[in-house]
Image (tube, rainbow, N blue to C red):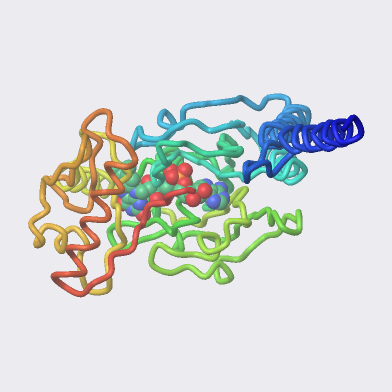
Length: 343
Ligand SMILES: Cc1cc2nc3c(=O)[nH]c(=O)nc-3n(C[C@H](O)[C@H](O)[C@H](O)COP(=O)(O)OP(=O)(O)OC[C@H]3O[C@@H](n4cnc5c(N)ncnc54)[C@H](O)[C@@H]3O)c2cc1C
């Protein structure tokens, strides 16, 4: 009887011990009890990454609102944010993200970007390299120089070829990347050479305009985000200053009349499909003035979506989706976004 009692006690204590271990480790009744430990390890690894990027890039900032750096005034926070004031800064930032295995996003003047409401979970490298030099009829400019500065320099020195760019609120680097243009002109017509950092090879290379695959709002830089434009050389022609000023005024007046410039936007949302105007197609679908949340399809120009104040990326994306669906339904045309939507 005593031996039986002892055996029962022994078996029960073994079961209890094994059960307790399973409960503290894993798969006890199908529940992974190591969850919190795994989560803690993940967090530790994340914090190690944080220490690294801060070590490699001491000027890096954290949790910076991206809305303030876009013309749309929309977007959540960048986990990490770095202002690159020179070519060397850009190279340094790229080396840092590579060593920390962090995603990066090149932000210039933010006039063609819609950041998500969640922001960007990596390093945003804001281009603020703004050196420029004039040499006869060529201007060599860092990618971060604003287009209106380029137009001013050209006008002052009686150089024609950039008048169309007046009123485009971007940088010269952003403009080359998307082959920005207006009034039958575009960057491809004035670009001579482009200095580029290839992120994959860490090499800096010069591209001739003919090697850049320029097309309507297109270039090789748009297709390959590992090519970062560092500086650009453009070639212009001598012209009478008054004539240049007159042309600029004509274009400015046209923009004022045709475009809704009073409220934040990112310019044209869609590329114009072959033979059509995206704005006209959207208008013909009856979407003029359509609002979702605090975003609205402009009543003045339907290819513009406006931030009426406090619009979210979700509001804008819903309008984009609606416009694409309706245009496809009514005209069989697929609209393609011109703006960049980082993920
Ligand atoms: C009111 C208004 C009017 C506009 N009118 C026009 C117009 O008439 N014609 C036109 O073409 N556009 C127009 N735009 C759109 C926009 O201004 C241009 O596309 C401009 O060239 C974008 O430059 P950005 O410096 O703001 O680039 P961002 O918006 O900062 O960036 C756009 C994209 O380019 C990439 N990028 C930027 N710089 C570099 C670089 N140096 N190297 C590699 N990638 C880079 C970014 O990663 C991003 O993917 C307009 C926008 C607004 C708000």
